[in-house]
View 1 (tube, rainbow, N blue to C red):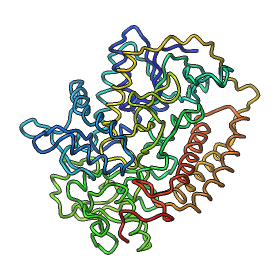
View 2: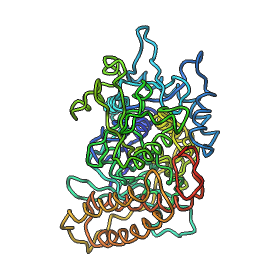
View 3: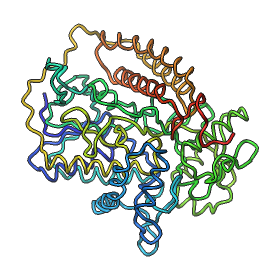
View 4: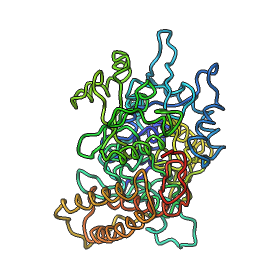
Length: 523
């Protein structure tokens, strides 16, 4: 068993920011960060877009950013949370810059401010087209200087430890005492006992397969919290990024940043027609839900598998400077953006729902916090405004830190049982797990994608139940491995998406059901 004061599950912007602040403030306390890949692998690392924050008070204001966020969230944002996050944003960005993060500046050394979909002003700061990577680099450099942080790469959190494992009466308040963790190299499962646990485990794009998220984004934190009986909210609101590079095999993974459209790129259908103005007066800079649905409708109308992003009219040398990673990736795929249109399709990108937390990041379970994409704070409502996610991660990790400074958790005194896998056997035939994973992803793409309907959701629910039962048998009978655990988690997350989709009786933000009145889109 491992004993720690603060356990953090996830090594993206939210988790590492919290780890750094706790370690610097409590040098005699142990901070343990568990991450299932290497410490740099997270959704943060792949965030091409920037961080939205108000720095130019001559042209912009907090109120304008608040209004853009509320419009994007389509009436479901928590206004108090929106106000808090946006007004705290610049402080958190300056703190990150003080720690060594470099963002794009002009010749006078002032921050270059970009504009993305849903923003009426220029307020998005970038590090070229790899902002997330720069933030991750900065945080890891700081973590490596702090001796009281233990990073556990290639460790997979299997389940949170609650009263269920300790045979505590169901009438008592649910509390978290740490987590059971799989060492992916040795295969051993051990206990991490913690006074306080924070889930910063990122998103769930792999539930759909075709996603801009990395392979680690399997919704593990949400699934663990759900099994521990935490409140989970608004899982029907999946944000699909409109412009992921289409690879010719219905696969989409590499993200063509929204900032490219902010730079002036236009969306065209197979006939070369610029179609976005038929759907929204903001054109290519409408919010992501509208752009994604417009693309899906254009593809259905034409019976094609993609649309195109046209950069050929732009200053290509300037485009190269702003988006070197995108430019090179397109070249590697035989696309010269100076003369070729980029084939794009929507892909699962960001979850607007998640583990419900209050303004201090507290979940409904005692001593369990959550921040980043796995959490539902009320900032995004029904649809996230572009570049508000890294902002939320930085602000909420700071909120959790401040709360823990004022209300330090008591030392956990409960005796925690070891993981019990008695009677289980080694799982043979990993191809069976891959087959089930493929089945799940196809089911979600087909029945719970950008455009849904109730009949499809009900079909998905029935098929998912069968898949769940088959997977639970494997879980009960076999030694755990990462693939089986991830499949189990993705099935839990898919269940939450489908069930909460069926309960939503209106189209709102990122949720679009053909059975209800069509909002926003002119067909």
